[in-house]
Length: 325
Image 1: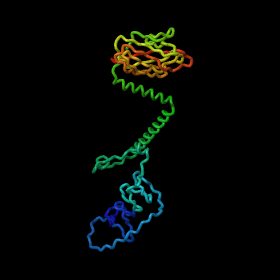
Image 2 (image 1 turned 135 degrees about the vertical axis):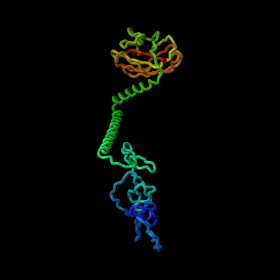
Image 3 (image 1 turned 120 degrees about the vertical axis):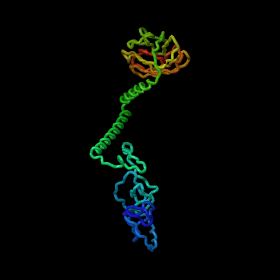
Image 4 (image 1 turned 90 degrees about the vertical axis):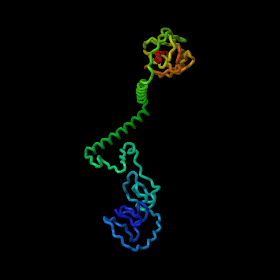
């Protein structure tokens, strides 16, 4: 390291321009002064007149191949990579105020380990002593990198499969919905089953009367012609605050034999309403209910259908209702 005569800053001896002030360091016979271990006795020396700096003309220079590190400042004039601490290019002296810094690759930003920040006066390492980790530490770091990259690849592949493969997407959504129901159920009010004292319908086919929709049996069902809007009427012995329903659609023994409800329009005795959307599945469907507080009866109008290829009736195997306890 040397001290530059003109500005007094310290730096390497093989650069052509000072990193602090940008001054050209290699005039005809002027050399930077080497750092000396002991102070030099000051003598009155007549300094030669300062030579006039030659006018620098931009020239086409060949940039040698060099290794650039993240954060290095790229000179806009000659393309030289400079340490982030420099203010002027070490090759041509151009200002680095508007230079472009070498960016860190995206995978290193996401999965790379960030350097530890030390407070002023704090030394790295335990007790201020940096220790070598040896082969064991190197192996742990290697394993950590491999694991992080494997997890990243697995996440990307899972996202692609989720986006492109519908059965996988449906399975994930079902699991997520179940977990969410379990988590939120802890904080919900306790729900109790409410049994209607009477169930009637606007129409019903022979052997599939309206009360069969609330007999707690899955092998029976209510059915009615699907050529017009049909409705079930549940009557309770007390004002109810319905919060949830469990619905089994269609004929459980032959699911495709009858039409299934796609949407139920609920009309409560209080005059309030609520719409219930149903999926086309023979499995139990838990659906929320709102706006029913104080209702002594509810009408369930079938206003949408999942249609069967050869059926003529709409069927519902079971509807179980729950109220706030």
